[in-house]
Length: 294
Image 1 (cartoon, rainbow, N blue to C red):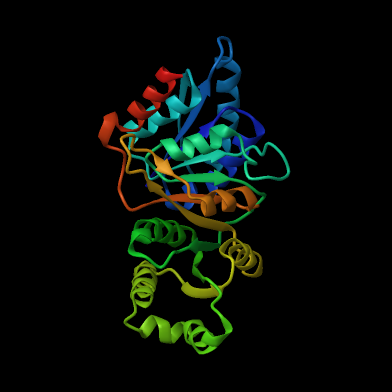
Image 2 (image 1 turned 120 degrees about the horizontal axis):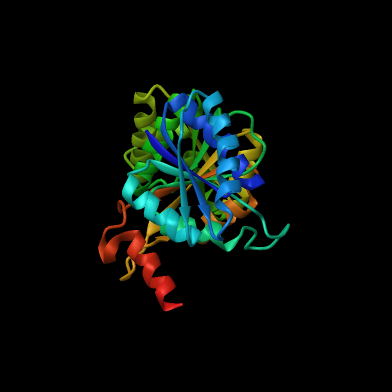
């Protein structure tokens, strides 16, 4: 496995390194610690900060490659990840305020949308990563995200809960609700939802990961956070899809954005559906066009 941890030497980056080490160590991941300086004269203090952060990784048994780049941060991260074939990137998160739809800095969202690998947004004070919650829509397009989650869970010895939330139906469909709440019956059924959830669970079982399926009814965001609290999960996995427009970037749906804004633990924004950016000059070309036009 190969990962990149992005750092600017600030406290949020320290947390990214700490949480990244919880995964990099057990995964024995080839790890790049990427620092970016925007101003002349900042390289020396940044290198000193990166060296201190590297000690955290070394304590976890990882000898990171330290890379320092100069320039616009998002473009530098895009360029590094476009050339490195990383399994995922780790970034820190700074919340702009205590409420509202856009809690994090704009750079957090832009990195998630721009780079090809999945992005782990490091938040919270977790000391271990032992229980993962995957928000699955019950569709095949989430399979790559489940596979990545399984690889990470197998490495750290974590369990995985596959959560599917369904809208609350009218009371006249109470019998249908009871049927849907019977997880075993659903997994044995030939329904699309049953087949897909069964395949996802089986892929985790094959990796030796303890996996369970949870069904909930109601408003998706409320149910996700209730499950997160009730299950005492350490990490949540949500999806992002690739745009179909002329500029191939990744899109966070409203639900994923709200999960990211409301979570108090690391959030892995996985890629669903189409693979890495290829058209229109790739991710680097996409960002280059944006900044050239601005």
